[in-house]
Length: 119
Image (cartoon, rainbow, N blue to C red):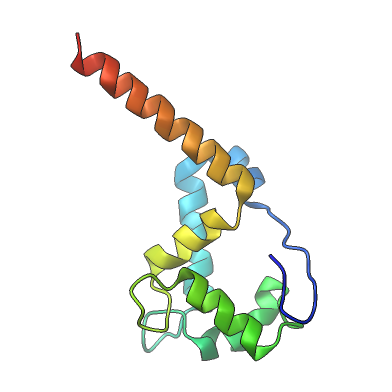
C-alpha cells in the first residue's frame, strides 16, 4: 500500500498469525485489533479513532488524507467508518498471501461441494 505523499511498506504479519493460531485464532486477533482501533462510544473505527491510534499500527507518519483513503477503501456501506466486518475484510485484502490462500481454500471447498452434490 502506498501513501499519497510518503511511501511506507505494509508489513504483512497475517499469514504468520494464521499459520501459528489457525483461522479461528486469526479472526480472534483481528477482532482484538478492531477493538483497539474503534471509537468505544460508536462501536466503529472512525477517522478520529484511527488517527488517535495510528501509532499502534505504525502509521503515525501518514497524513490525514492517507488515513481517510484507508477508511474509504474499506467502507463498503458508505457511512464513513469501518464496522468489524469491513475492518476484517480490509485486513484480508491488504494481505496478498492470505487472499491467495483464501481463494485457494474457497476453490477447494467449491470443488468438494460440487463433487458431493453430483454423487
